[in-house]
Length: 304
Image (cartoon, rainbow, N blue to C red; front, side, top):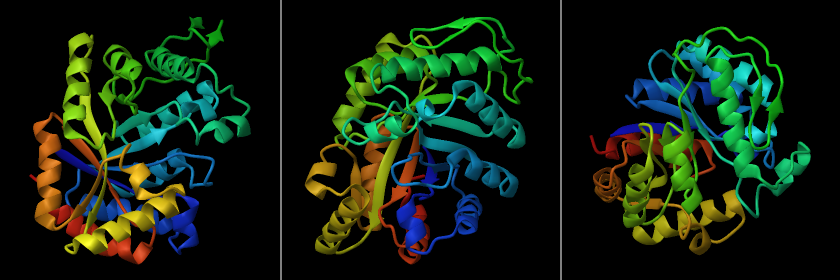
């Protein structure tokens, strides 16, 4: 398995004292520790550092790691301009970009769409169209593009990407429809199911209908804490501060792994046995000092 670090970029981490240059330093440290990738999130609800801008800074300071979004919300940006921004990042990083993308989470993402005056309706079709448009222009085509939602009679001419066809695009979703779309239109799958059996079943469904190779990935929230009571308390605090809801709700949706080094390693190994090939690690804290303390412990716990 490959492992990557999700670098926290939202306002809460900034309010806690983390600076933007320190975020770049975390990407450099992740590379030094031997991780395979670094990732940043995307939202307007919490006013984060812009993900594509930050990845550009990562590209200038790192040499080897994959640079990714987990997950980008393409609908919040003009598709033609975002195609250019991503292509620029691809060229600056010499082909190290991978894009996790999503259509938004019901009950949380509607205000973000309202901010940018993008209709919430048909958001999944809009996402698929944007990705298809990106690939259209990254392949050197400037002719008409007509999808289900997006329609262009002409498009700009773009330079050739560093990687033929442009960066890989992974779908961050776990609905039944997403499992079909992942194998049809995407290069990877980035879910976070709390049940290993559900992950294995979802991957099997993707492979049943896939028409292209699909990288199976996983987004996992992790904390090293030997005391099980304390581990639960810290996950509870993270869930409430990050989402404003109790842990009992979050852990029904997302995989949350807290425990000793060996317990974390065993749990991640289970997902590897279920087919996960690239695991994105989000450390369950919003305190910069705790994050920096956790990082080497988490890396030490990763099964290799």
